[in-house]
Amino acid sequence: MRSMLLVTIVGIGGMLIGGGGGVSAGQPAGSPMNAIAERYVKLVLAVGEHDSAYVDAYYGPPEWKTEAAARKQTLAQIEAEAAALAGLLGAPQPGEDIESLRHTYLRRQIEAVRARVSMLAGAKMSFEEESRALYDAVAPSHPESYFQATVDELDRMLPGSGPLIDRLEAFRTAFVVPKDRLNRVFDTAIAECRRRTLAHVALPGDESFTVEFVTNKSWSGYNWYQGKYRSLIQVNTDLPIYIDRAVDLACHEGYPGHHVYNLLLERNLVRNRGWVEMSVYPLFSPQSLIAEGSANYGIDVAFPGDERVAFERDVLFPAAGLEPGRAAEYYRVQAVVERLSYAGNEAARRYLNGEIDRAAAAAWLTRFALMAPPRAEQRTRFMDDYRSYVINYNLGKDLVRQFVESRGGTDADPSRRWQVFSGLLESPRLPSGLTTAPAR
Image (cartoon, rainbow, N blue to C red; front, side, top):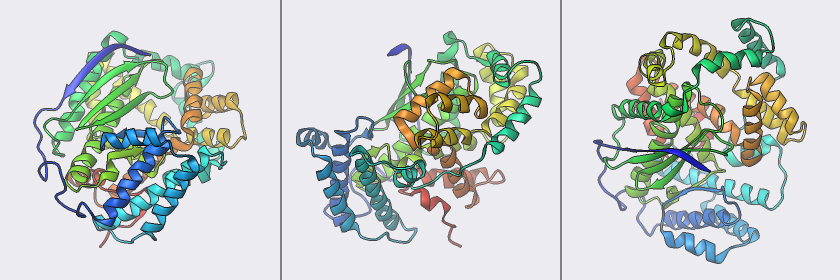
């Protein structure tokens, strides 16, 4: 159910790179690759008729979507078509040029379609098999001792009596954004994230997004890309929203995260190159690791070093009516908590592999990810809905960071970091390609 607040952020300024729409580069309209790409889009839309969560975004010809709904292909028919397309594409094409990347990307996306179809048909995969098949990556596994060391460190940082999770939640209470200030705080965070992004990335002058505050979701935030450089961003208010979520969500869902990622693909690949395959986004595919990983790493790109703490202390804390003098203290604790992010993967792995039940998974999240019980329960619902998708946030961020920094995008050269980062956003690169060493 949607709730109260609604605000529209409309882009001003910016510029188009490469002109307007249409095919201006890359393969000609009637090329074999473009024919395969069209069949791929229709294939993804066909899967969407069996899985309502599968098509995360589509802004191609509307008649293709109508056709998919009318045809209602069976899973067996979809698998046969996907196998045929994979055969037409043949083996991956090595190389860093844009056409080789396109070929390899499209081939791997089709493999992920086949994996999702097999799951819908009843095939069972382990957590690792599923993440490799769908997202082209496998997250590392860590023993409990790996997380316990960090939990013990936090235990020393928050002295007092009672369970650590209770002490942590009591500490966090002082940093909850009041509901009547959410609109102001998010507006301010979005404007700053956009300002910082525009300083390094040219955006279309007519880009915009709408923010809605909603309830009863298994996720904390979601970007629904609409095409034509517009997004709908929803923020879940089921649980208390802490002050750090403003910048997190403004960057992750907006600038330079999902909103920017999708509009750059639309402008540079769909409009300027005529690559229709990028007009559809299958959620359970390698594209999601790039999308989520870049959205999370984009927070560090936009706010390097101590700049985030300074901005929040000086601007967001006052806007939220919180005590600015406690900003540094809050982020010292948050930095330790964030080192437990892979605990979520571990809980999902055990839960989805059938080693533990839902209650045990929630308890594991409370113990090792330090999620309060209501938040841990929400996360298990996310696991039910999205399964191994959880790896895309932390492993994705680590892989994107490795890709950018290995190409000179470090703290020592923030301009280069923005250049490599934005170049990744507008390219058809796969997760497995993020570990490829740069050409010398």
